[in-house]
Structure formats: C-alpha cells, structure tokens
Length: 457
Image 1 (tube, rainbow, N blue to C red):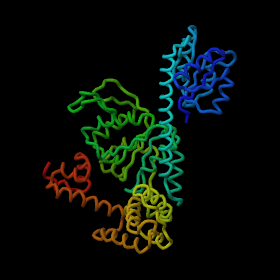
Image 2: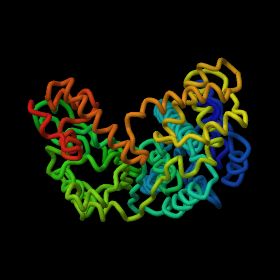
Image 3: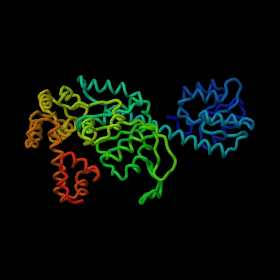
C-alpha cells in the first residue's frame, strides 16, 4: 500500500521540479523527484507512492510511456501539460491517467487534484484488499475431501470454471452445492466481479421482475426509489440461482427469455439492457424428473443444464469425514469463539459409521453441539458422539423407509402438513411458518398431494 501523501514528481526541468516540491511541502505533502522516465521507474520499484505527477512531454521517453508501463497499478497518474498538449493529455486519460493539470500550474488546483487522486488511490487499495480477503475466504471454504467422488467434482470445477458456460449444480440438501458455485466463480475470469446468490423460493412471483431486473421510482405502487436488480448487482460476475425448481411457470418463462438473448428491461424503464453475468443454477431436486412431470419447463432445463455437476451425498464418501470435520471445526471456532477440538480414531470411526441423512450440514451441527458439550480444548469423545447420533437417529424412527430421498420427502411433507394445520389451512400463514413465498407453497402442495388440506387462502 502506498505511503500517505508521498508523491513522485517526474519532470525534466529542474526549476519546475523544485517549484512543485515547494508547493507540495507548503501543504504538508512529501515528494520524491525524477528527471526522467527511467529514473521514475527505478523509484517506483523501490518506493510506494500515493500519486505520480508527471510531465507529458519530455526528451526521450515521455509521460505517456511511463503511464503505459504502470498498467495494472492502482497508483493514480496526473499529467502536467502545456497549452499545446491538451489533446494529448485527453488521450492519456483515455489510456488510464487520473487527470491532467495545465502549466503554468495553479497551486490550489494542483493540490485539489492531488488530494482527489490520493483518495481515489486509497479507495482502489481498499477495494483490492476486500477482494483479496473475499478470495481468501472463498479459498478457506474450499471443498474438503480427497475421495474419488470429491476429486471428480473438483475436476469438473477446474474444467468449467475458466469458461462462461451456464452450470447446473444438483445434489441432496446439505451437500455443499453453494461451495461448488463459489469454486466455479473463483476459477473463472469473473473472480474480481461479484458473486451474488439468490434464493428463488423466497421471491414472490409478483416481485420477480423487480427483484431480478430492478425498477425505477414510481414504476408501481411502493416503488419509492430506483432499485438495482440482482442482474445489475452481479454485473461482471456470477449470479447463483438457488432452489431454481421453486420458480413458478410464468417466472420460468421470463427467466428463459433473459437467458436466451441476454437482454432485460428495468421495470419502468424502456431502455433494453444487455447483461454480462454468468448463471449458476442450484437445485436439490431431480430437474429432469420435474420436467417429465410437467412441473418445470423443458426448454429452460436444457438452457440451464449446459454443464451439470452433481454433489455426492456424504454417505457415498465417508472416508472424507475426518478432513471435512477439520474444515468445519475451523468455521465453528470462528463462529462460537472456542478452541477447535480434536477427533480421536474412535470418535472418527463413530462419525464414519453414521449414514448422515442431512449430509455435511448435519455433520456441522453435530460437531458444533459436541464442541459445546465437550468443553473448551477437550478432545471430542466417541461416547458423546454416539449419544448425539443416537438422538438424531431416534428422531427419524417413525420413517420406516431407509432411502434418503424417501425419508427427506416424507419429512418435507410432514413439515408442510404441520404448517397447514397450525395455520388453520391458510396458505399465506403456512408459507410464513415455512419461511417461503406463498406462491411457492403451491409447488409443495402439488408435490405432496396436500391441496385438499389448504381450504383457506
């Protein structure tokens, strides 16, 4: 990061250099000086400066050549120009210069431009720091496990990441599909852009266009201000559509049109916009089966299923439980503030003997509970895990079918049915209890043949 207020002055005329140094000194700004581009490049390799103030025209290599050599640097460059070189200065700004100041230099104008450039440089440094921190966080939350199924997932991420292809990530709930989406983004040319995640189940059908495309003030009742949609938020980056299967048919058609031509309109705005966004769709449903059942558009499915990646359930790679547990312990430690515990061989064997119907999410919950119960810094004992897992198994004893999908759907049906009972048949209240949009409740009612239990609206 650049030193506060340190400016590099590049000027071939000694009198002008000295005058500029004095102007900066009076305003408390430190300066380094260079009489040529070669000397400036040497100083830039040795020192961190907040701004480069360079003459545009100099004997030999000029200021424009210095600017081009600094391509990729966050250090702002201000050009000093004579009356006859304004057009060249404008060309330099198009090449990346922050601003230009005409000779003879007005001291107040120069200091104003310098201060703005320094603040601009600080903001660029901060943005880069935040991006690096986000990249590090994504790396820290990388997929754990060295088994063959996880190695295959990583290979697919490596293959599709650098492309701009649409990806469909499927797998049971709790398998870590969001980590696959983050991994694809991290491997792409869009890694410096935003990664925006949207839970489709939480978006009311009536607000889909406003949520995705944005709206202008006054476009509809309640639109009190302009609002960017999720596509605008994800511009230059990646948009992850979670629970894509919950979108209503009309919404599916609107999404399909955007994916086909890459164009959309902000609600209340006649201008057509072109999106620069990569789409990753995520689902814990078998979308192909949903297509055959008539619940999901076939053309949208084909548009999304360009490059499919299926996350394996934890029961299919139990050999990874130890490595995944260590990754989860690090997150647990950061969240609850206790030292990360250790797992002995007996405790690890206990974890590997369980089928994990809730996948990695259930493993995380079990480990967090065990961490709290075991005590700070103490190794987690097998007996404690056995007790916790026995309780988890007992809670699902009423489900005779051992097939994970059947058991998950049975639990889902019971949750929907219980919500309807508590809401006296009101779809709106039942949806509120379930934490989903009322329009999406219709999908679950059809799926589990519960339409007759929702008499109220």
